[in-house]
Image 1: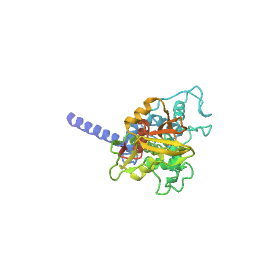
Image 2: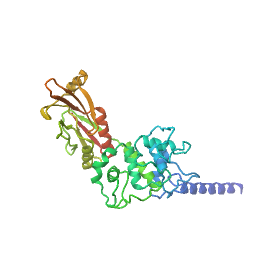
Image 3: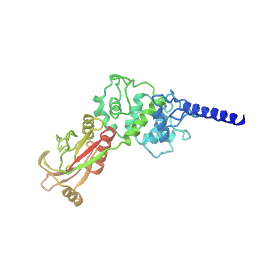
Image 4: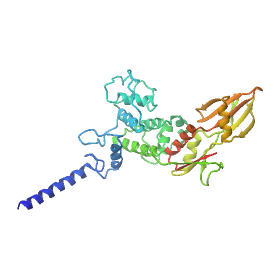
Length: 346
């Protein structure tokens, strides 16, 4: 009789354990069913430390995500070291004892939040449009928002079209339909978890970078277009700016290949006109840079490096080249846009 009682007790305990695990769901929170569309994103966000629950073993499914909570998650996503200035940057972020004070200030320091308003509204629910904008800015791609504005596929987005387009092209946020985004709709915690997890996966996606010494790209590879026109009295960089890399990556599509031209180029200009142009070898570039006669500069507009000097006859020698930083930034953009291969043409 005692043996039978022990068996029944063990069976009941096992059943209760099974039911409790099922109730907690795959995400590890009691309010997230296994069948919920965001269960996997929620679980992985918790595992990677991007998001936490609201207490009591609950995630807060269906609750809105606040701007402060999302700023905090972005700090974790980007592994930013938190800063705690004595005075806050916003009129509504002055209490250093608030749990979100340092996260707001850190997000502001890294450009995810801007000072276009004196208030950051930390306790307001974040909208889908704001979530896209803050994420893109956190990734350092705000400079591309103007160029991507015409690429926005949603007819109901009238503000921050470029940010929404970039987030959409990176696959980190989706529309509610083919043509609607509902930009002003408040985002829920599970929607924020999905966006954060997709961004995390993009940041850690594998990408292969190959140097093509013969200067040729394989068939099917999309080459980022260079700008060769003249602007005023100075020839524009014969390099592909980030906008051109973005365009090439969108054309190449998910898993595609993009080529970046990186052959050093020397230009001689006089009175605003190019009088001589020739390609340089890597050895010639190194020698010119090591001479110390060139004033080096990195074009923020074209994301390429150059060195220049004025000759005795009044002409200007300009050397355009792609530094390791230039290539790394353009490669990272390709990674975020889902490109599988980048060929550096030298």
